[in-house]
Length: 277
Image (cartoon, rainbow, N blue to C red):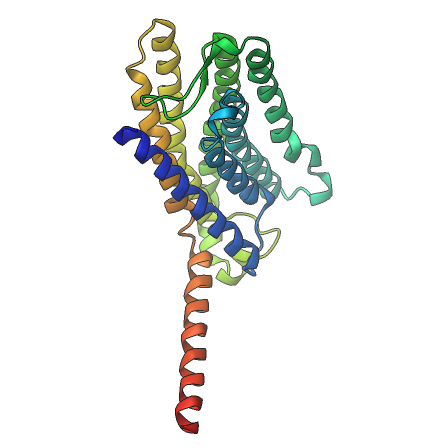
C-alpha cells in the first residue's frame, strides 16, 4: 500500500473517530442543535465508513460513497432555508418539513445508478489496487450523473452562502447586542459562529468541485494522473471536518468541564482515602 493510500485510510479513520466523538458530545451537550448539524456528521461518518468496504463487497462501494457526498452538500441548502425562514420571522410550522428529507431522496437516486450498472455489468467496476485506495466505476454514466447532482447541490450551497453573509453584515450589530446566553436557544435568529465555520468549509467545497470536473475530463481522456490530486483532497477532508466543526466552543467547554469535574472527583476521593489512612 502506497503512502497516499496509507494517509487516505488513516485520514478516514481519524475523521470517523472524530465525528463519533462530536456527535456524542453534541448529544450530551445542553445546547440545541439543528437537525442538519447531525445530518452533516452522520453523512460524513457514512462517507468515511464506505472506504473500508471489504474487498468482496468492492463492487458495492460506489453505491455507498457517491451518494454520501451528495448528502454532505444538502445541509448547506437546509441551513440556508432555516436561516432565511428565521430572518424573515417565518413560524416554524410554516417551514416545509419535507425540505429536510430531500437529502435521503437524493441519496437513493444517486445510489441506484451505480448499483444497477455494477450488477448488470460487473466488469465495469474498477477494483481497489495499490494505486487506487477505493473502488470506482469504469462506466461514465454513473460518474456523470453523480457528479452533476453533487455539483448542482454544491453550487446552490455556495450561492446561499453569499446571500447568508450579506444578511450577516446586516444583522451583525444586532447579534453583538444580543445576550450570549440566547445564542444556544432554539429559534435563535442566527448562529454567527456556525455560519463562519460553514463558510470556511465552503473553500473545500469549491476545491472539490474544481477537482471533480478536472478528474472527469482527464479520466475521459485516459489520463489518471489527476486522480491522485483528487485522492489527496478526499484524504484531507476528514481532517478539515473535525478541525473546523469539532472545535465549536460549546463542544470544547463540554470536554473541559467534564475533565475538570473528573479531576475534582478524583481529588475529593483521594483526600477522603488519605484521611481514612
